[in-house]
Image (cartoon, rainbow, N blue to C red; front, side, top):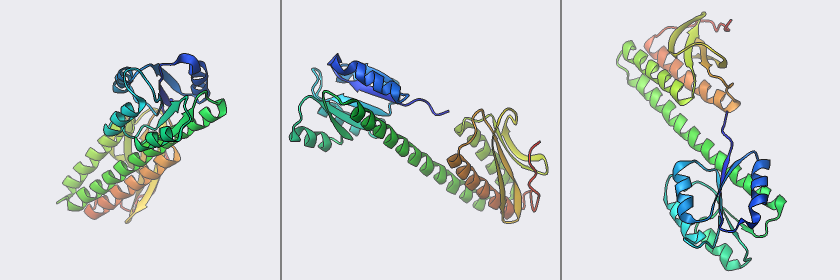
Length: 254
């Protein structure tokens, strides 16, 4: 399961603490609170955060300066930062956006607005994570396709498939994965046991079979689409090298 979102609050003033913590709880998010920039950097070095609620004025570091530091670091650059201040001045807003802040809140917070803006920041963070995941995955699919295309013989192609299945197990937090046909595994990695997270039939280039993934949590619709693209790429490579499964029926697991 996807971990709960995590919010970091950087604010030396505890006046709004109860409201912020209650809002985070309402969003099913974990929340850490610190009072200055140096403490915030220590938190960020230890944990992954989905949103930062940052007061503009702090004793050890202004919010603007901390925002610049975070946006310059690839590890934290994509975390949405919401500036907070007791001053409602146009120059504060402009300065905040010039340092690449995501949003702006004026204290005292209005509960519904606070919740909506934090929820939106978390949603944006999730979308960015999903986009990066898709890009990395399809870069991998292209790499696999090229590897199978340039393999000099079936043995090299089979080694490529085995290696990619092993990486699939690790990258998807799975127990095991297999390419099956006629009730038997042609290729596999890990343990073919436990809950079945996905069964992906494929039929490409006269090669048919089923990719099965064993994992505690069921694959969602996005994962199933990516697995289908992955298995289709493998099937085309197998057809190119005449490896198994040719015209084999797709047999459901028992």
